[in-house]
Amino acid sequence: QGFFLGTYLDAKQFSPLKSNLIRNFNMSTPARRRLMRDFKRLQEDPPAGVSGAPTDNNIMIWNAVIFGPHDTPFEDGTFKLTLEFTEEYPNKPPTVRFVSKMFHPNVYADGSICLDILQNRWSPTYDVSAILTSIQSLLDEPNPNSPANSLAAQLYQENRREYEKRVAAIVEQSWLNFNDDDDKDAKKDAS
Image 1 (cartoon, rainbow, N blue to C red):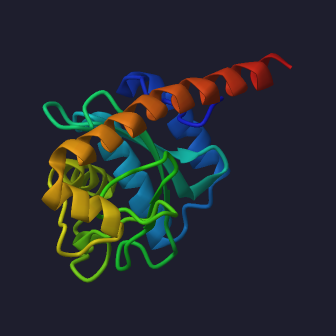
Image 2: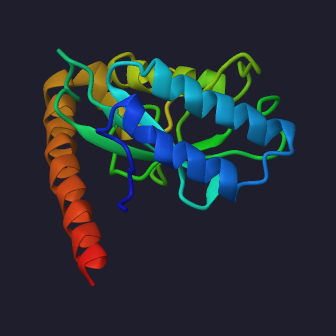
């Protein structure tokens, strides 16, 4: 079914997935019930430029896609992420990582993200939509004073042309890798 089931589907097409989630998952914990509400909200009122859904067999692990914001160096990029929740959600934030290669002042080499709402500024009022839209905003509005990638932060501040050149390379790579994953999934589904 592919890495990002439903990425390009509208909310009505999600209903079979939602039914499977309810059947396949134990929804008896507050975290799991909250994640179902987050998923329903994401289906019914999807924010522009982001998409996410739980994996087929674990509501505590989500796959997501963020499309690079318009009029930014990240425009036209398609960036994959994973979100891993614990039973302490929403009182504790999920662990969020870019799966796609990323060159950004606030993204570590392993894809983890230095973003205040995922750390010391977390609030239980944030849901998956808020997390994804905040990360999308971070792409255009990095915080070079709290760098996770010191080279990206330095280039962002001192050599914007080189920074944008490197971002353009990862945008192009995001398309190549996204299509490669689709090809692998199609071959796997055909076998």
